[in-house]
Image (cartoon, rainbow, N blue to C red; front, side, top):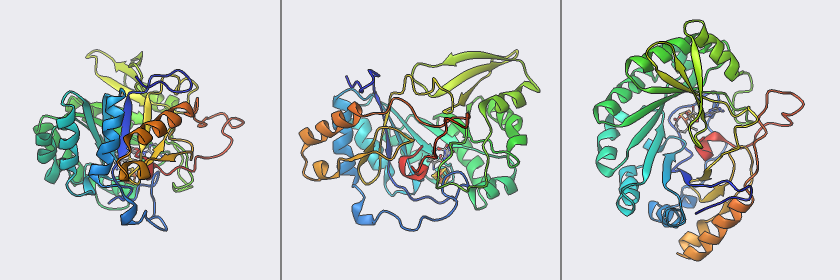
Length: 325
Ligand code: SAM
Ligand code: SF4
């Protein structure tokens, strides 16, 4: 079992398979970065898998593949199959912008992927394009339908932004509800890579919009999930709110993150990381395990996102497209 320096059980590894992306989301990567990680510094699937095995053997039972956009990395289904074949009962999920799902969903299902989180920020083509930097909506919607047809457990993610998509919170909720999929609204997490003119909506403001139509009941956090769940009115449809600015958000954090170049990151907010690249290239699994232990020991108690100005000391310098969110 993996326990961090604050006594929290860590059983969830998020693996970013590429920092590259086919979108340019305003809150994540509004412009192509000055330089990408050179291709030769990326770990191969075999190298990433060596670390994944160490993590599974030591207690990780939930793995999420992410990016950048994970579906632009070639042969991703092979990596999925490696993990699935090693531990078929692992909770194996992927977060995607959905654009390439029509082409890839079937192969991923066959390979053993179980769950998909798909980002959907707008149901208006022009607003979706404004947020993502290109015309994306119809491909995302086709991707969602394809994922459902393939039998994936699907969740949607929306990041509500002031004056951009805030008037669509209820529409996106209704869309998800009609398809019987859960939606999670994510508070925009301020970071130095985002477009500095955007303003995120507070969780409270998101809930206020939903309360304009529905009575809602707070259900609480589901174990170590980052999502605080709510139920609306009569039919019991449940949605989630991911509210990292709240003080208790990090209390049960069970996650660590691995980037495509092998940086093991204990917290989404901070820059600190240790590299497992050399260890896996030398196939030194003992060394990889020691680095994992070190990273867990130093996992910060909490992030520094806060809506109270005196507490939000500085912005996170971590790029979401590197950690995978
Ligand atoms: N490209 C995939 C996608 O967009 O779903 C996976 C990577 S993306 C970094 C993972 C999640 O992080 C997405 O749901 C995205 O909306 C969210 N995200 C990115 N930047 C964010 C930010 N600054 N604040 C809150 N959520 C963010
Ligand atoms: Fe790409 Fe996802 Fe970041 Fe948007 S949020 S730029 S889709 S990695």
